[in-house]
Length: 222
Image (cartoon, rainbow, N blue to C red):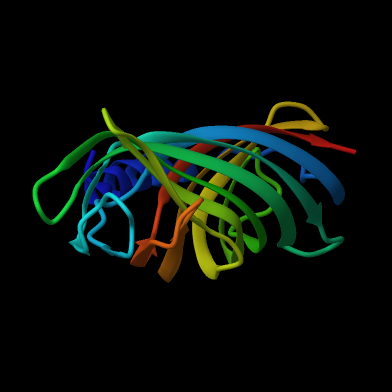
């Protein structure tokens, strides 16, 4: 799935949900926990590889399929405020296939990351069962890796510690006083990442990791 098509469809769904807002009791202030799952879309990559034992130096063509994400967020709704803070963890995985500069194909691969993030969210309405919101924040990669495999074996390149940003839009829907559904469209951007070969001296350079997520979760207020 092309990332532009993914974003357009997800934005349409998000806006439609927001427009159907209906009156309800205002959400409680305080802490909530939100496990979630979602679809992951990521653009194809064109990094460069150098120094790997069995991959020729030069450009790589990494074709990335749609994938999945799963995570856990902890939110705090401030009293008498539309602002919410959110801290969370997320795992993301997209299948991939890689072609080296000399045409050698590495058809079986995986592009995955383990990240932590801190966001702020602003509610666009108050006192409604449907609450549309906008948000943004920072994301930190605990680990990102690109695995590729063919009949000669598997190669893995990884990195950690990169920092980027996120932009989000979504809606919350109150089921009860404590339980609520939440859905969001999120765009993350971490640029110019260099991956080091595990067990070797090679490097994959100039990775722009910019995934889009369409996620749904269920929150519980304490």
